Length: 400
Image (cartoon, rainbow, N blue to C red; front, top):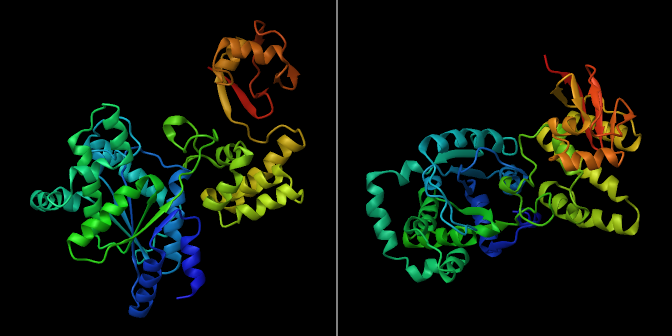
């Protein structure tokens, strides 16, 4: 096994427990001419995935490209409990219908990154072994070897206990259930975010109980969201979704804070973000050009090269050459409407006060004519172009 293959697989990882074990596993797999089984579990607790999830998916794809097999576990059983990782309170229990619907969309989106070749991926549901009559006996046997003190060392459990917040007993079962998944699928390696380290290590322990070689554990960084402060999360509204349009992917990427570009290049592309940052600092590369490159790469990864080139050209046209966009999003509005209400109607302003401010500051034009009075009634022409600030455009269509 070439040494650079090991270095590639460990690139950007935070924890590898252990790198020596991974190297040995890779050598053994090469000698035996068999692929390693690389486990990753996703609880379908929400219908959409975002670029934060693809950090892990991209690492799985690297294993696939080196000939190994990804075991993608859809946690339809564990999702009904809810992973307590990072939670300050017990999650609401999902219905079987919600889990099933989310599972379908998760797979569709995951395969925008993963190789669909059956020789390189296997999709399994953990209800296949967790929702069986035999599992109760198995679970009690495992639970007899795991102590309450051991589970309470989890950071989130410890914080809640000290804050006198309740911890549901079912939440304490979660790490054991996830750990048993590793036994069920015979995992050689398990990947997860840094917040999953406890659960991944539990898999090693439970495999040891079953006298099987413990899996190698690899954790990847949590991607910081567009707000530049918190991890990417749909509930925080700071995401780029895998199912976003090419226009939205490119536009949102251009709003990424400059200080996050290195992280995004490293975790979401094959480019060396540290080298790109050096070029920016030295003045060899303008920060805006670096961000355009990043936006194009992210768009290409989800929508293809042609879409990325189209959005880059559109960006250049609108924001560099100050021209109007070729295909602005449309919005239906009444034929007669005042300026402030118009901005709220098309969601360019969240409130009347913000709409007034934008118009009074001269940030709003309709067909290149500046609006000056928020109260003045406007007669909307079919196909008129509304521009708010530098980035918001809407082609107006009249409600019938």
